[in-house]
Length: 258
Image 1 (spheres, rainbow, N blue to C red):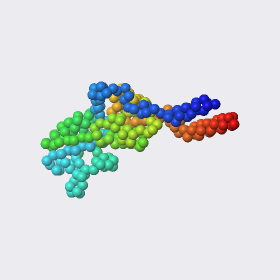
Image 2: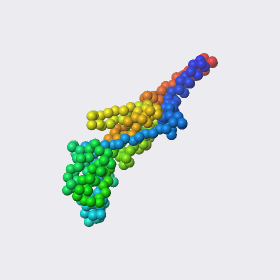
Image 3: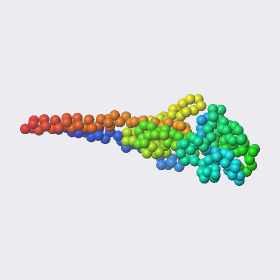
Image 4: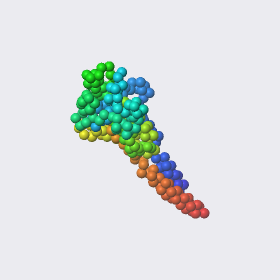
């Protein structure tokens, strides 16, 4: 009888500690000697139709600056507002279905399939045909990512840096939950040829060389729940049942001894 009680105790202890800390460690097979050898190259994002661009043209002529950014007008004492989504939508330059943006007096400029730097040079060339001595800046405003599943704050996040990787994205969502699986992280990406999906195992060093380690605008990240989640949700029920069985066996043992 004592042996049975001991076995039940071990089962209860095993179920209560349902996850190993090893399941929560990143890059488990990455040795210390390899850390300095890891080189992860960020991708070069190419502008697509429907992207919204920040375009700033600066020159020695205030009228030229005002032409491309009317909200800079000192007449109204305002500055160009890109600090919120509404300001970005109103002041940005939308890339149309043909990959063009429209600049005042200059007309259409093709920017699709170009990097920010290539688009800047193309716009600079067009502007210089009309106004000499100008400086052009271009940034993609529509760099948003959706983070769903087992993170502490799922939602849509906007990135204002040039690059963001999967670990930084999870940090934006305040980290993973206690039942998140690092072995199966899904990244959904929209491409000109349709949607593409990636499965990332964040416990393996191979993820550093994945195309999806660095995220692109409009990527969707889904952190799947671990296989222990269902047990965790019902652990209190299991614990009560095992406690009841253990108590019953102890009572029966006591009665038998008597």
